Length: 394
Image (cartoon, rainbow, N blue to C red):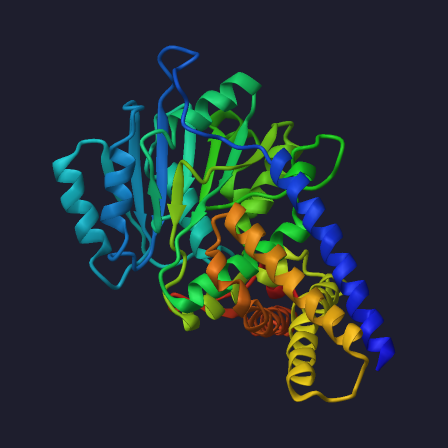
């Protein structure tokens, strides 16, 4: 039993190191915030491309937020990817009300393409965008008034070709508030923005919910045609831009836009299973590291904490009381760390005590995602079975 106590102390030490490292990472994390004033005078035109499939619940709010930008030299091209609901009708009505909105309707999905890649590509080919810059954003996003102008000024100031932003995660249900921060934290372990933005390192990452790219560089890199069959098309597009000599930049954009990705537990599992394995590089060692980390850092302190508190209440003589209090203290310390980190990230800190449940579900999602991709079963998403091109060739 004494060995278990020392393991618990070791876990507490690891948590302390993670907490300190996370504070430094948060402090150094690039942020794009609303600008106080334009530094370039009139900004270049931006063509916004919004792929949409069965998004009638989101599309109007998304478009209204885009049309309310302080940068007015924009156009919005919505690509309806074979929706079975009223998405296309709503966009068509909006286009009659505002000349800046255009609708592109797609038919069957071509062989060798994922739905989102094809929609983004057709938005460029058939939408005939006239902007010097392209903004690819999802239909479930909501944009503040400077979500285009502020990142565009940063891109011009720093001579960037590709800017991707991380949003504020909107969550309304219990499962969203439990799971979304857990998944985001796991991604942050393997994809740190401070490394992504270091040109001396090979790390590449992007968030497909917001990609602002210079049109010239996008075309030179081959655009979405270069990543046609990729499920993780945002990261692969960033790689293509980087390989074409473009400068890639990832930053926090929490003050500029938000997204509510999923609305219930089923959609959370289905949505993350689509790409979680690939976010970890499609590598089993990383999967094992992630599972081990969640088990040791989240589940272990909770189990030991409940065991220690039960033993103290019952007066059981399993360990001397100082050891039991020490083990319980580690659990409380871990809770405090989780609460603080969730609060700093605006990740619903009151849900920190339920983190072990979130970790259990995250382990299931990761194992489910790995199984689907490694066996070539494909992932069902919005009525389609999604394969990565590697799986198709396999």
